[in-house]
Image (cartoon, rainbow, N blue to C red; front, side, top):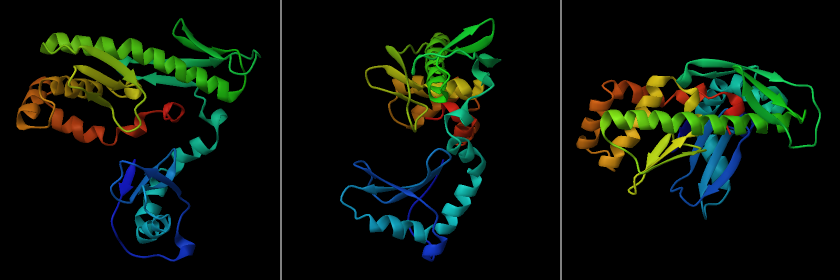
Length: 250
């Protein structure tokens, strides 16, 4: 994901790319973001007139054009709709395996598609509608994440002696993980599509937060003791969103 804010060179209306406008109670300023899924989005604080979205895009048109070009190929996958998103293979680096996907030509009532793994193959049966099949794949993704990620967290907890009170696997939009003062570690279900060293960094990061809920020097020292290459992993993680397959990037 790319983002921008502030001012820049102006542009004529003919040069301004298409954009969507969203409002956020958490936004403190006008913000531009570009993702493959959503394209160019302008987020406005509550109470800010919509004309400011047009102004923001016109002032940052060069940046927006470059950012859209960078995600153009992946954006085509989203624009193709559910049928274009259905994969033939699912790569699970965190489990060191690749799963072929077979779509059985069996009809059924809308919404009844089911994805089940048998013998190392993922069979999607039932509803032949692409949207139903995509939903079934995502449910399988969720089940797989709930199986893999807590187990990996407990393994690392055993190494470090930092055991969470609870582990939750969720569908966060912008975070790979978080930790609460009550000892809950929340993990993004799409971590299963990241390589093991990045998953370990995220798990270690959240476990370290159970000791230090800030980003103080003590926190970074603890994290480095758990992941000696933490700084490199942190930098790599910033661009890891593209590793999530388009069908799973909701």
